Image 1 (cartoon, rainbow, N blue to C red):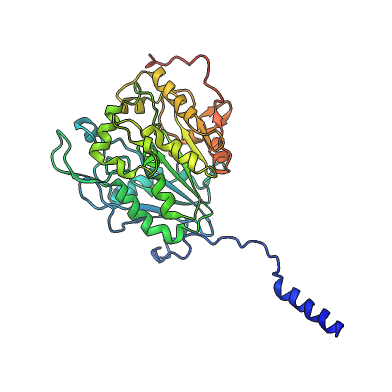
Image 2: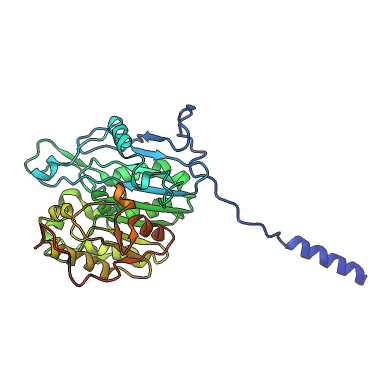
Amino acid sequence: MRSLLVFLAGLTLVACSSPITPEAEPVGLFDDAPYLPTLASAQASDWQFLQPNGMQCRDGSRTGFGLRRESGSPNLLILLQGGGACYDFFSCLTNPSRFSKGDFDAFIAEFGQTGVFDSDNQDNPFAGWNVVFVPYCTGDVHSGSSPNTDVPGILGRQDFVGYGNMEAMLGRIQGQAKRARQVVLAGTSAGGFGVVGTYGLVGDELSPAPVDFLNDSGPVPSLDNVLSPSLQSQWRDLWNLDAALPSGCDDCSLPNGDGLENVTPFYAENNPDRSFGLLSYNRDFVIRTFFGFPGATAFEDGLYDVRSSLPPSNSGTFFPTGEGHTFLLSPEFYSVRVNGTTAADWTTSFVAGAPTDLPASRPAVSVPLAAAD
């Protein structure tokens, strides 16, 4: 009898034990996507332009988004295009109001293998990743929810529907993208501001996939002499920006129009396991113009003010000297350096979950530039 009990106990232990097996490698996010092209010429690493219902430009024309899949890759880069904004007569004149399939083909012909899109560069931290490219033709830094809107001095109604475009894009990919091991939401210039405006949406729609925040040249400083509350208020009212702001952030929309500078710190503090990064030339002339021409030194003050507002445990900044503009879609991504570290090297650390501040502290003496104060 004793022998039988020992034998039965042994069976119970075997039945209750699970063999230890290594974690399965995630499948490629888009390897089984039903909307991928079936033509033999449309292989992995080819760009395609998808046009889901609900994506349109501010002139009412239809648009879409680019997708380049990498077979077997569990990671996803979502890049938001830059291109100014539309909030008064002069700004609207230089902001594109449409982005068609032909525009996409021309863009890819010029930039489809540049910067972070260069899949052959061994220094590219996103080489081998799936990539989504979101064009910009809504004039609202990808974050507006105000269709059929009048802009003083501009003929015709304008559709500021960038936030809805992001919803439509995410609706098309989320079935696959929710499985991602890592997602980086990035943007250049107006797209950098778009990262600020849509990070919460992307995180919610792609959950449980982890989403990191990478802003290229879209800083939102708190100094009023750099980014005034009145300009913020103009954007809020025209584009209905408040609809994109995170719930629970009371300081993100203040009565005087201020508060947009509090959005990124709010997300960073409430997502301590995700990385947050900002790249900007210390005296970026394009963004200074966008802000209404604050002085070069004042703009630099604003950048370091942004740095001081972010939790150092999960945030980093890359501030090379100069008046240039943007990195991620530029050859300078691999050449511009701070203390010997390129923007690509800095981004590699960011992607690995170790964002850093370069330079570590603000230089005591700024390098004089032609447009400096």
